[in-house]
Amino acid sequence: MKYQEFQPGDRLKPYVKCYYLMETSTDLPLEDKAFATGCIEIMFNLGTGYWQIWSGNQFVTNPSIELWGQIIEPLAFRSIGHNVMLGARFFPHTAACFLSGGIQQFNDGVTDFSGIGGKAVQDLHAQLMEASSLQQRLDLLEIYLLTQLAKHEKNLHKLPLLNQIMQELQQDNFFEQINQVARRQGISSRYLQKIFQQYTGLSPKLYSKIHRFQNSLLLVAQKESSLTNIAYDCGYFDQSHFIRDFKTFTGFSPSAFSPEGSSALLISPNK
Image 1 (cartoon, helix red, strand yellow):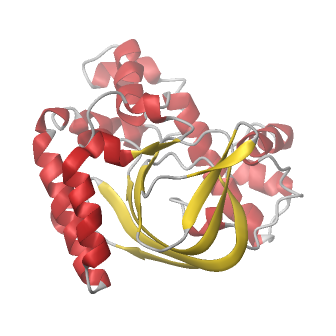
Image 2 (image 1 turned 90 degrees about the horizontal axis):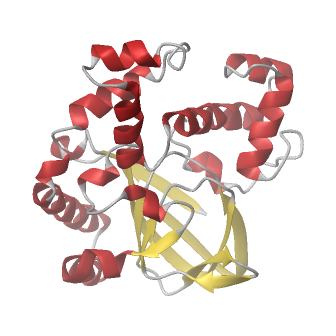
């Protein structure tokens, strides 16, 4: 697997965490698992192969233009053939600036984005397929997102509030002081949680757990610290809480998780 990340232009830096290119080429299915990252992504398959996700009791083939919602439970997927995945990863609270309707409806799934984005995104996919260079593809994706941002301008006026809440969430006592945080922003704590869920698809507590999990995932992969130290460094109450959360988000205990070949480490927003 080959994975690269690219920075967006200045206009989109507040909204797009990165663009990325993920290439896989194999005759046999290459299986992996996606874990919760707190981020929503749009991906275009520009290769000749296909991706599949586990749904119910079988693998089903993904569309060529994919919207990955907030993945909360571990999601098995596999790549078959030659796949070239060009994607845009949004910050946890910014995908709503490009989409219509509630973000939460996309949680724990992969949606056919061609049906949501309509002709504009279908035309983009065709242009990306015909582009002669990576830079041309990145430029096309950037133009498309700038256009969508302008179309959803009404969603931008609450972004300064969300930016401030995201900063406040990094404080250890956020949930003890949530009423005070809300008052500082001139809103109620109930409205704070409502607007956060509207823009991220997650409650503040669930997002905080995912963020903490991602920090622990990177430390587990390094294999340099004990589980007790990782739990302490990542802000868990104790080791048992850390192990429980890790297993919830990955399906593995920390000691059983094998980082070799896991794309989750490459794409972690906390790396």
